[in-house]
Image (cartoon, rainbow, N blue to C red; front, side, top):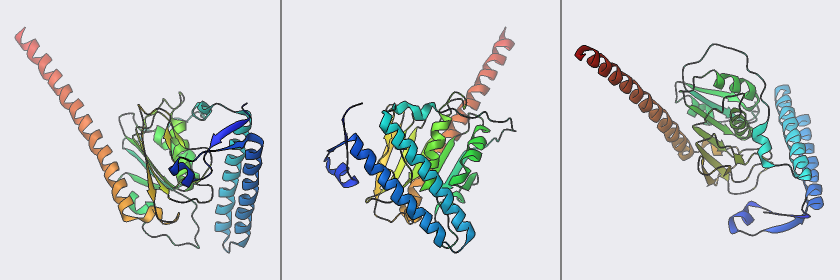
Length: 291
């Protein structure tokens, strides 16, 4: 393992191209310290929550972040290969009836009843008849539901905060032999919160990544494509706060337009296949009549 690693200290350094060297032991020590401090904040917040459902939600989020953090630090310590995230085993999916419509899922982040939310992902989900608005904690159910779609149906995944981290997890899980290497037509991430989920797998055609122009607790940095020849990744800096980025009107407009474009392209492709089939049938019938 190399004695030093090159990385960016902050998003500002990333944008200006300033690199710094930190020894691996020092970096790991800093990572562990951050995890301990921020996990303590999550625990304290849970203790102060006045509603039990909020306390449970915070505890679940804290558990996920702690697990992700430990996994990330362990990978860094042993210099684990980057390909490991895509090679994760996927549990067998039980046989269920197919769902013959597009898979359009919107995964929200940590939801607290004590905090009001206006015009978030739920509003965009309502704009599409096949849109489904769920929690980041429903990742396994979404995975099962996506696999019930025929392969000619598009897959669109949109996530904010912990939901952004969850949709990247889903894309990686779909990029496996067990899942049939399913293509994700559109992946939208809004200020994802998590660890080690900045690399977008090659089964994703396009990723729109809306990110804050400043640091936030546990938020991921710019996304990069594992294979730029198969995946188009667009990082978009936003001035809003973490809880407001999913409410911005121009963000809604761009997501709406991207989803509509995917659905239109899928419809046109199916129509072309249908017309090609009709033409072949007509041609064969005409050949038989002339013989």
